[in-house]
Amino acid sequence: MTSAIDLSSLISPLLSLAATAGERISYFYTQDIDVLKKQDSSPVTIADEQSHLILKSGLEKLLPHVPIISEEDSSSWNFKKPIYWLIDPLDGTAGFVQKSKDFCINIALMENNHPILGLIHLPLTQETFYGYQGKAWLHVGDKTTPIHTRAVPPEGMTLLLGGYGKKYEEEEASFLKSCPVSTIKRLQSAIKFCYIAAGKADIYLRICPCSEWDTAAGQALVEAAGGSITTLTNSPFVYGKPQLINSSFVVLGTKNDTPLHA
Image 1 (cartoon, rainbow, N blue to C red):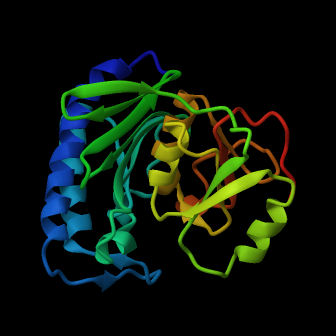
Image 2: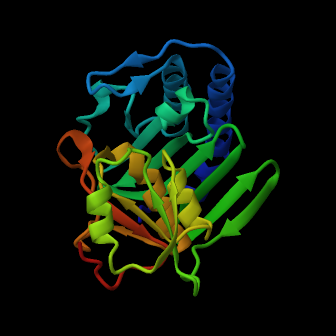
């Protein structure tokens, strides 16, 4: 943990900043807007860009000397600093475009390539999940409630999967043969981490590659709430990888002391 930054002092301004960006996203959610394609063919909209500008401005004022790596600013992706922000201004753009509620804002503070604080804001419900230093909370309106992961229910695990179609179903099935899964839900975006942290689900399996800004806030949140994230071979989940690309991983509501094998 860092001794240079009082993490608790960041929460109030981060809640306000995320809410402001969320309001802007919610405004565009009600509008007919153009959807463009990035080089990797993923969608991007004015909502992504506006949220990025709001977050970037606010984070620079909050911690002026801490760099910001954002999905929407490719010039930031090569920052090499011990402490930095890692953000996704609109995670789940596809869900946003489809007019689903399955999108969010991800904000993580990183130290030595490990997330030490994570915040995920859901613009439409105005729920904010955040965690650091072994504690996690859900903030809605004027109410803040502690949250924690749960023990696996007797009837079996609730499994969360991404919404990326049938391409990875065989790999998912192979990995999960030994898992007592009773319910499967498919969701887009880092909202899946919120379900795990709040004790509404037990395992999140990701086979399809994603980026580090998709997982950093969620990892900090889940770890603070009592859970874990590892590679599929039970190795530590690390950051600062080439092109900031994640390989497959599994998130559990409990500490992953026993490897799960594909």
